Length: 201
Ligand code: MG
Image 1 (cartoon, rainbow, N blue to C red):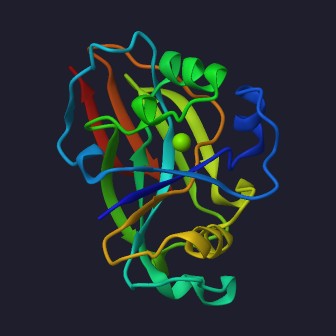
Image 2: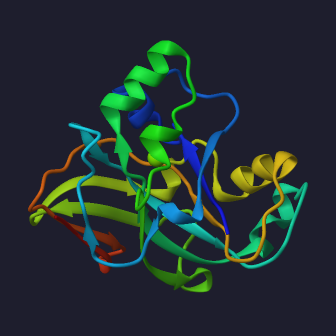
């Protein structure tokens, strides 16, 4: 399986990163070894600035290439919550040098994943989600604020890349990204239901 991550998909997050609003979706990938299903995340020694990015995640249920937006909703059946952990100091360095940013994004365990909800049980245009750290709310988002909605994302990505069953699409983070530290407890919610629980060790 593979993990596809969409960048700059919420206007307020693009603003806080001092990035332009994209005219087309921006995507990158994380390998299967980035997936973290357990609750303990060990702070990597190569970064001093590890940022949380809470994101809605689509679980792909059907193989597809060159999917038209109007059929894209047939290709995912569940929506969950994940964190796109980012070594922000290293990413800034890569960006400044015009280099690919995999070392800042695709390292082991950089993609914690929580529980999923059946798509039919959600209003796809009004999914509220949030991240708390040690009980304090840090990020709040709503799928209605996506620059490119789920179907547009799937249509764009599959122009280039075939989706396979079990692939995950992290759909972008809202504003409020920031650092985590050893000892932090991260909890993620969709519509008030706790689906993600990560302890930074
Ligand atoms: Mg992200």
